[in-house]
Length: 177
Image (cartoon, rainbow, N blue to C red; front, side, top):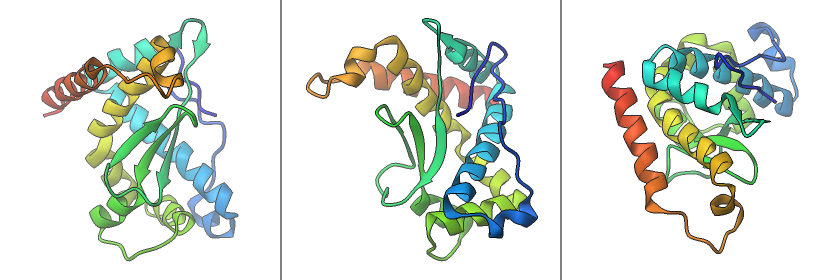
């Protein structure tokens, strides 16, 4: 897992060389991509004042360390990204990644290997979607602050959650441009 600490820096627990990515198992390729994306997103987000503030808030929540995996996910065509409370994962739609990068259809593992090997494509992805990741990180923060609304499926989430995420996203965008 990736830890966020007080300076909002993700510790990268594993490092893989791009040249070796095609010898990896599917699971190892996806995990390797996660670490590369996490590091790239956190460096990018931490360089913008609103992003840095958000990562600072996430750093320690009620004494628990916040955790999130950032993974490409198949079958998602409605949202570019989403935060899954039950899995503790921010998922990015493989469908939209393939469209953005103008790539043919491929499995998640093949996409992971492609992004590991092609740093410029990975950087384009990070620079194009960091705003959406900020939005989903707000939901990660909310899931720790207001656990009840995320844990209980029968309780509707307040609209204010989405408004807070959208407002933070817009502040980040304004500072980025």
